[in-house]
Length: 402
Image 1 (cartoon, helix red, strand yellow):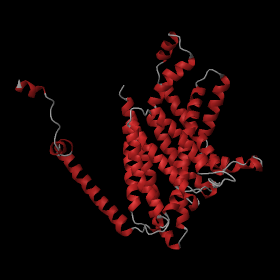
Image 2 (cartoon, helix red, strand yellow):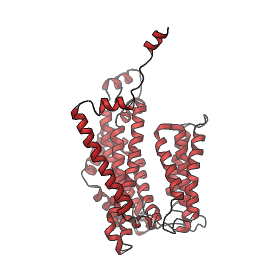
Image 3 (cartoon, rainbow, N blue to C red):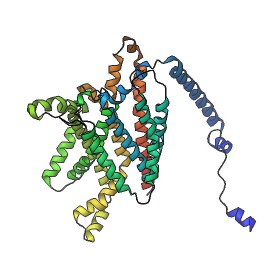
Image 4 (cartoon, one colour):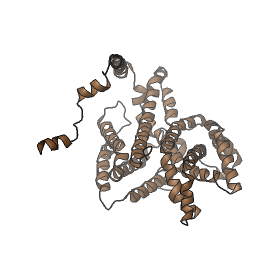
């Protein structure tokens, strides 16, 4: 009995030394590559660490951290930013409890980041005690949302509905406010800036361009000549024009054709240009997924009496979107980084604020590398977690496996 159970038991995983011998030192050539690679990585990390902690001058970053985050948003109205951040972190915790691995790493990272920032000493008076208290509350709200999200009575559709409400209320009601209001006085978007504008344009562009891109992809495959022609012209014209040109058209030229009493806010105009540009590329990505669906599935669906709308919404489109997850996320990451182009049309996003900070002090002119590296790290963090969430979603849906 003992011998049989030992023979049928699965082999134990290899230890660290066995794994290194098999993967890194299997022969003399791999051993040489491993030693050279470790040497290069070691000296690179030592040089980078030495520059970051001893040589670099981070004053352009630490002198005005709030400027990088929210621009010149009125300091007396910072409670709106606090409420928005607390709401988002709570929903992020609920999302972690409901959808688990998709947002777990980002939620944990954000909680740790807020905890560190709450106690991190900065040589600036802009980070006041109330701001530090709000940052210290965020990790607890993430955990509270996580515990609530794990309850059986909390379903994913409820959390999705709360996200939709938050994404509508925060940029349309809480942050801009209203005219002649004492509780929420109007805050012009001319004073918005930094990461706030970057996230607004990128999240808004992703959320709004996705359904438009899906409709354009379906329209390009439509049997109606007018719908098909319109979709083709829209996609091909927009894809043939650089994003900066589209931003100029919506930000400057569009305003010239509108009457003075119906001028559209400049951030909204930039968002419109971003959505139009991204929708054209999203449409082509989705169309690639639609073409990958075997025609036999459509014929089988028609044979059992399904209507065209049912075939598209229940059979074709879900499979097509599942196939194009990697390309769609790549498009969204590209859109997130392309929002820096709004600086050219006079909107102070994160990159624009960085350039403005460099002009605060003549000594900061020579410290451009520190500012741009700080901005690059912020973009990399968001892009990495978007890519990580995509990989987790692909594993859960079995993309590339079946």
